[in-house]
Image (cartoon, rainbow, N blue to C red; front, top):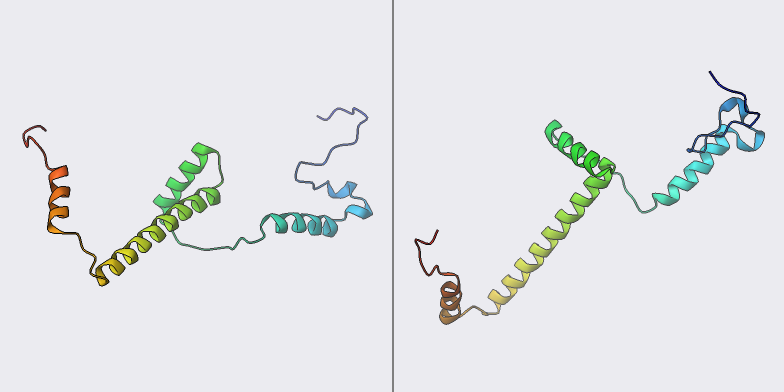
Length: 127
């Protein structure tokens, strides 16, 4: 039951007003164009990427998204960013190491021995 308070009903937060109360200025096509422009500006520089994932992985992503109150796409973007960052770092380190090897820049036997000594257990039965 709706009470008549004498006030005009407010449009939902999405900005869409009920169709029977739309003025000529706010026709559905104009509202669509307005929202398209707003969302288009927010999505500028974003691309759509479609991937197939297992149902288990999707459930795990959804659980994380729900736990942190974020959309699934936000969680996926953060995961991809972390993965790409890690892989890019690893690839650069491998390239650097290969360049050092190509230049003949290897650790000496003494340097290798010092590293092994640093990490050698003093008492093997200490576990």
